[in-house]
Image (tube, rainbow, N blue to C red; front, side, top):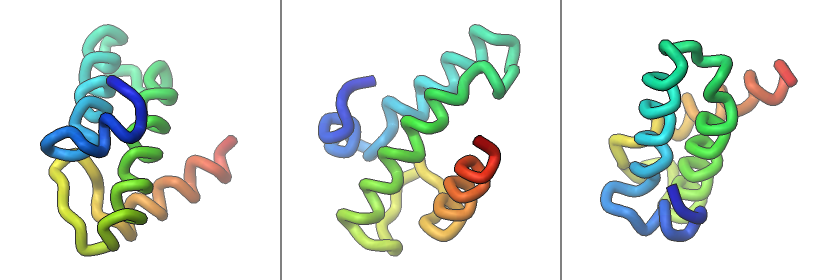
Length: 79
């Protein structure tokens, strides 16, 4: 996983961050609570992706724009 600009420029965009989540989950017996920073990093990348390309942008690494925003709101309320 690199910086935001590098991860957005990757093909497909944000893919290194999605892979980081999978690696974290595997290392931690699929305990999602241990991978929160990787999830936040993916959401940061996906949010930047949609800001740059619009809500119709597509990458398999990110949830659809409206679902991403919902998840980000939910995470912010939970903190």
